[in-house]
Length: 459
Ligand code: F0G
Image (tube, rainbow, N blue to C red; front, side, top):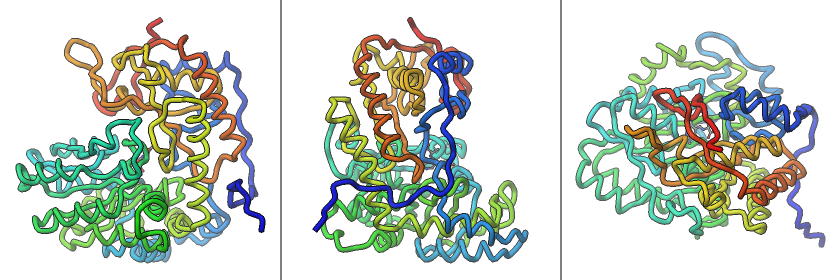
């Protein structure tokens, strides 16, 4: 029997998009023009774009076919009913509120339930989630356990909620918590999964206190695959069954469908509580649109309805998680400091250990991501002091707990040879690491500074 070791892409390519070409000199000029912020670099000056796995998926032939069936009626569109049916079947949740992307669902939910003097806990808030919680006046508290804090520690479910910290928070401030969120997989914590046992333990703590649990489920299918692969008792369960069990423990879900929805745009808020759903829909109409389209075209709803089903395909998920692991393993074998173990959607370089001579206040993650772009045209994203730190009153940088560089892998977009190129690029920069210096922030806005701030090299 032929037992191949190669995990092939479970698709073949029908439409091709040429990769842009851009010389090192052009990239150097692009960096200067962008104030050394990779968010300011034009995409056609990027060879391999690993900035995000969000909205960057390749759609399938079934999704493109569904797009032609989009019903663009303002109210009561057939496409909405199809989307609603798929989300209900997946989540078991009653009210399905489409939004143009995940952060719109966040703004609506936290705008309704958040208020000054309230607390919203999460394993780790994504940046927009934190910003929307804080914009409501509420406090965003992260409850990542000890095992999740050390990038070098090897554990299967590093996305788990710290249950002891949750117990303390509930005992001290339970009456100030209008809801809790668990992010699956935990993006800011390294794309690490949350175990079913941990989700259940969270549920058991919140339920007696009447605190609703929401899943931030942008990458629910990848989380389900990790549970299938690594959690005892789930090897015989399908990703769909596991996903349904995850959602059955929640009272609601916030989704950016730009990840595991295989959508280029889209999101939703799903809820069981009738009164809360009414309040959220009232808010939806103000900025997103009528409740049967909520900021999306009928064709988008069709594409997402197909994507949310396709993502649970076992062959796809096996390939997806293996392909991320492939990049991770080659880099680990070369001694590149990484967050361990491999995440679902991304490989995270540990910039503090990669560039030990650049102190956190001099933004080692930024330095590393700039070098990857300059040398090889690979665009990544800093997840560290730039994103989560802040400038102190004396103008120095208050570092984030970790400085990571995320290589996020778009779904069904790049082939193994693209990934081999990325591995080579990281290894090259690793060999040159002594020559990389730090950066300082030259200008920053008031909120979500990483998107628009500018930098200056320190030497
Ligand atoms: N929650 C998580 C866990 C996310 O990763 C994101 C987006 C959002 C919410 C917000 O969703 O972008 O549709 O408004 N993450 C992207 C990223 C942007 O690059 O990780 P959105």
